[in-house]
Length: 172
Image (cartoon, rainbow, N blue to C red):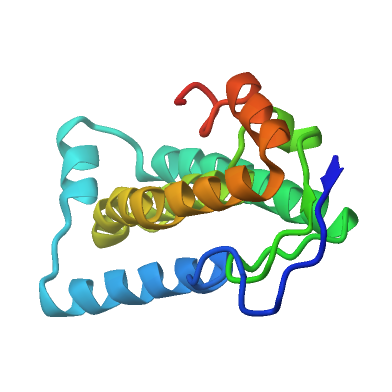
């Protein structure tokens, strides 16, 4: 764990909604799209391949639970060190242990995994479509900006951390 000097209030990390608000926005957008342009390919695939919908829901529940656990573990690790989960707040401490030793972005990664699981539980097609699109947007617009910020903020300590720990488990 590396601490940094306080920043002026205007020098926060990245202007973007907190992860839970982001998840709510993705779910809201998926609901709106499902209402405007209903699709049902998850149910159709399950029917064609003779997959029991209960098994699909159970698999989704396991995936969603694992994702939520990862995200919550990341949030807990940040809070335990006195860091703010909100990406628009200045980062005062670099957390590199616990789940942050497996992935540099456990909060976001867990969120995407959980949303994918929820889409299977409820056969929620638009959520299954929007989740990877939202991940791509956050990865390009937020995570890369956060990483540049953290590299400026923590210099060598963050560069060494990036070499040691992948961004998303096996994806550097």
